[in-house]
Image 1 (cartoon, rainbow, N blue to C red):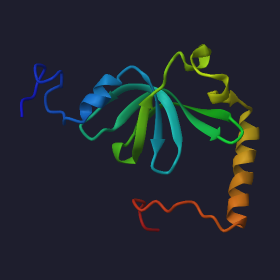
Image 2 (cartoon, rainbow, N blue to C red):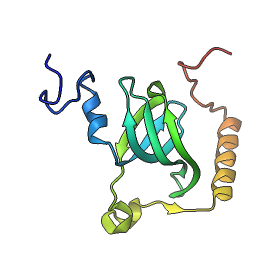
Image 3 (cartoon, rainbow, N blue to C red):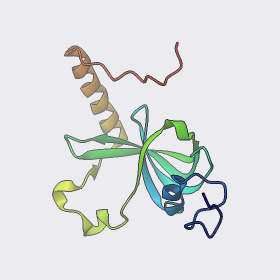
Length: 140
């Protein structure tokens, strides 16, 4: 399989799936981790293991039923590729009128969102619903 700058635009030595990451460089991404945390940050670089270097990263807490979110600023982060479940580019025009009002999330105070998350988790636990077990986690 040909590699290098002339090989379909891929950098030498990178696997074929890396083209998705290459196309996402210097773009703002939403990344869902295997522990269900959601990160929003600017992808600056990556390596052959899909480890991601993100800048201006926030952990986004989302209350889907209430259409609210709050962010915790984390700064520059290195995310191990094995922890990434899904990532996608954030449309810069989405919040500035590109999305229908019914699809937009409203920013809320962090304390309010964290309190509501705790309430929702307690309600789920009272009904016997448990968080999914991370089958990749180290045994404790």
